[in-house]
Amino acid sequence: MTTLTHRAPKSPPRRRSRAGADGLDPFRATTMTKAMLGLAIFLSIFPIYWMIVIATRTNEDAHSMPPPLLPAGNLGENIQAVFAAENAHFMTGIINSIIIATTVTVGIVIISTLAGFAFASLTFRGRNLLLLSVVLTMMVPLQQMGIVPLYQMMVTLGWTNTLKAVILPFLVNGFGVFLMTQYTRQAVPRELVEAARVDGASTLRIWWNVAVPAVRPGMAVLAIQTFMLIWNEFLWPLIVLTPDNPTVQVALRALNDRYSTNYVLIFAGTTISIIPLLLVFVFFGRQIIGGLMEGAVKE
Amino acid sequence: MSLSVDAGARTRTVPPGPRRHARPPGGRRLLSWLDLRAAPYFFVSPYFILFAIFGIFPLIFTAWVSLHDWQLAGDKTFIGFENYSELLVDDKFWNAVLNTVGIFVIATVPQLLLALLLANALNKKLRGRLVLRLSVLAPLITSVVAVAVVFTQLYGRDYGLVNWVLGGFGVDPIHWQNEKWSSWIAIATMIDWRWTGYNAIIYLAAMQTIPKDLYEAAAIDGASPRRQFWGITVPLLKPTIIFTVIVSTIGGFTLFAEPVMFGAGLMTGGTTGQFQTVAMFIVKEGFRDFQYGYAAAAAWILFLLIMITALINFAIVRGIGRSR
Image (cartoon, rainbow over all chains, first blue to last red; front, side):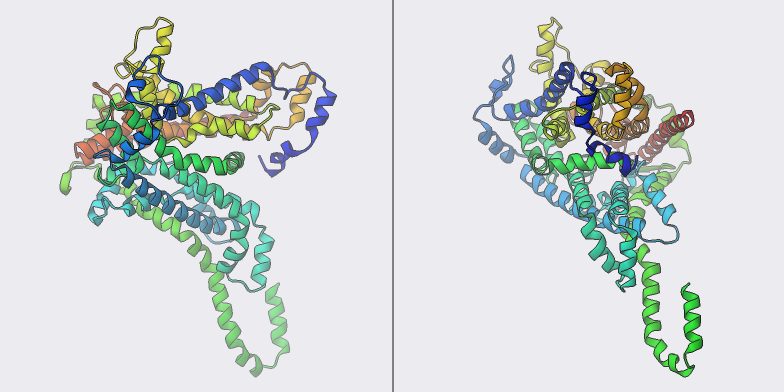
């Protein structure tokens, strides 16, 4: 699975095959295929749509049978209620989540770009062994495994209920290093690195002036994926933060516990919680798909 | 090469001359030698320092904690493997393991099959490719907690859409949280809803690396699309399938948020623990009952379970490699 075969779909045989093997074209979408895709898309979108519909309704509507399927005009009211909800601290949660997700994203992108450059473009003793250790730790659920001592560590340091207690452990991301190694390998020719070195540039300079400009698309993909991942983190913030200083996911849980019969309130909360990712998705959709597909082919 | 050039240069120059000039270039050479040798370690050090502190250290410390009767406020006594032997006969722990494995299986098998079919459909000639792919991937933007909240309402006993639809077929309202089978199905659908599209996109990427003429040749030979799918696509996708199985295994064995939210935010997983997973068990023991040692031992057994499953996967990978 290399770049060679990866480029295959972009080559032109499509039109030729249609003309050549008339009626035999194996890539013709049958009605069956279209129906299946339609169903899949309906199932994918419907729960999100329904969530937004309920968020615009009243509790009376939400309890009616059959359930409502079209939006109404109560969204503003419900959102206000979410932010006013006692013990949920929703606003704090959103601010905390934005700080955490942004910091971790920037951190992981820098750490991974640095390490990826070293693994892909520099030679040093122990390189293969270190890279192997990165790949192996991708397979270990570090967070769940070490959660008890990690918590004790934060207690000892007096860091519980601080954002750094959430941020620092999240910076350990073997996937990012692996992704950037792969990307740098493909985007930064070794001759270019050697040429810059002959010209007398230091390694740091080469990184900044040669590697970083070349791997920028890879950094963007990593940033998008990291932001989405961290925004959705639940277990560790739940444990290390107190309920009055939550992330948005922890606040959602509090909302769900406290107001379990107030559907519209909870659904307005979930709707607010997906807005940042919805924006990321709308603006960077092409990069998300591209990044996922390229990453998959290289695994 | 450079050595012999140096030697040549040295023989040609007069002895006292180069001595005086050698100093500054020598210093610079030392710097650049240092740069060449040390810089790579400087570049990888941020990752490995963080990894040592927040990855490896907790892992080793977990092993140490697991050998103690370690309770709140550092009150600890060394008890050897007692936590482990206690866990091995703890019905609640094995119930959590059963739930975790059960939900994993009934979630992953249909999920990967559906993802394969979906990827195959997406691989056809279609208009609006990007929109189609994004729609399939849309569930991924919703957080696990949001998914769980929405699906818990969909599975509500009295006002849930699912019971309403089933009611149309004459099925009595189901209390989804109450039974093992029903809660497993409900949780599995949450996982599948969120991840099927993602896996389909991964498969689609792999499918596009398969040369088109393989299909064209098969089509000319009269192979039906179904035969092409099972005879060409699936075998060539095996490495990718294994990859997704491994990723799903790790995700499945550490399942936490969905069952927690499905059970009103509690760690007990229903009245009799019918959907309590191992991750929930660890959090309950460690952070609700403050049995740190016991929770740490459970974490290590969970790790062993994941490793065993990963080894089985690895064996399958090797098996495929040989049969090719």
